[in-house]
Amino acid sequence: MSSRPPPRYLPTLTEVVDPRTVSLAASAPISDPAMAQPVVAPVTEPFAEPFAEPVPEPAFAVAPPPHATPASQEPTHNATPSYSAAPVSAAPDKQALAQQLIKLVKPQLEAELRNIAQELFEAQFSALLPSMHLHIEEAVREAIEQALPEPPDAVN
Image 1 (tube, rainbow, N blue to C red):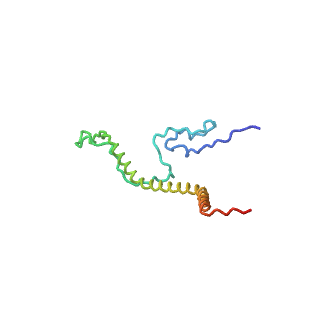
Image 2: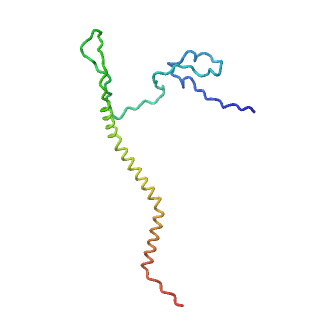
Image 3: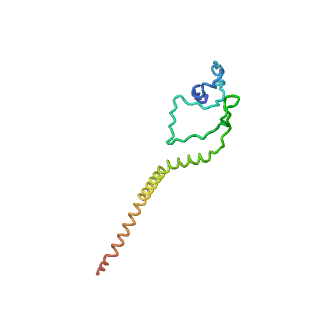
C-alpha cells in the first residue's frame, strides 16, 4: 500500500496576493507542480480587504499632532513653502489621550469588577453553605442538649 501525503490546501491567487503586486510570471501556464506557487513582488503598503468590516469610529475625537509646520510664511523663489519638522512633543498628547481613555473606561471596569467580586462571593458562599449548615445544626443540637435537664437514671 502506498502512503501518499495528504493533499495540501492551495489558496487561490486572490486569497494570497494583492492584485497590484502580481508578477506576469504568475499568470503563465504552470507545467511544473513545484512552480505552482505564485510569484509576487513584496507588498510595500497595506491594502484593505474588499469585504472587510468598516472600522468603527473612536468614541472620542482626538486631533492628530502636527507633523510638519511651514518654516516661513514668506514666498520663496519656487512658489511652494518649505517645511521643517515640528518639534516632537508627543508625550503630552499621549498622556492626554491616556487620561481620556481612563475616564471613559474606568466606570465600566469598576462595574465589571464589582460584578465579578459579587459572583465570586456568591460562589464561595454557596460552596460553604452545606458545611455551614452542618456546623449550625450541630451547634443548635449541642445547645438544646445542654439546656435540657438530664434524664433521670433508670432505676434497676
